[in-house]
Image (cartoon, rainbow, N blue to C red):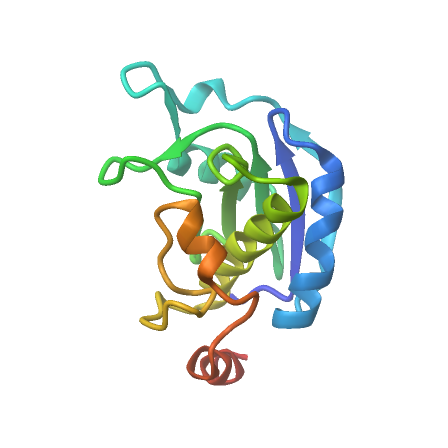
Length: 173
C-alpha cells in the first residue's frame, strides 16, 4: 500500500517547531501532505547500543510503524545519533514496507547555522520520504536521492530530485 499523507512525529528532544519546516518541501517536491502530529515519542532508550553509544534506527522504525494506518506514513524526527550495523552512522533510515522513516538532526547540525541545518534537514527528509514512495538511491550526486555520508555531501545536493527521479516518482504514483 502506498502512502498519500505523511505524519510527522518528534522522537526524543527534537524541537516540534522543526516539523513545521518540513511541510512546504514535502508538498512542493513530492505533493505529499505532511501532518505535524501532537504525538511525540520519548527518547528511544530501547534503541540505545551502549558499545557504540548510538541508537539503532531500525528499533525506532519499529515503534514508528505502530503509528501508521491506512494510507498514512510516518516520519520521526529525532536528535539522537543513529546507526545501522553496517555503517558508522546514518542521517536517516526508511522502511517502505512499514511506511515509516526516521531522520536525526544529531550530525546534521555539526558546524551548521540554523539556516544550513534547515536545508540539510529538508534534503534528508526528502531523501527518506522518496524511499517511502518507492525511489531508490540515485547516482546523480546533485539529486536529493543520492547517498550522503557527511554533511558536506548534503550541502552539495540540490533541494530537489533529478529528472530521472522525478520521472520515476510519476511512474510510481
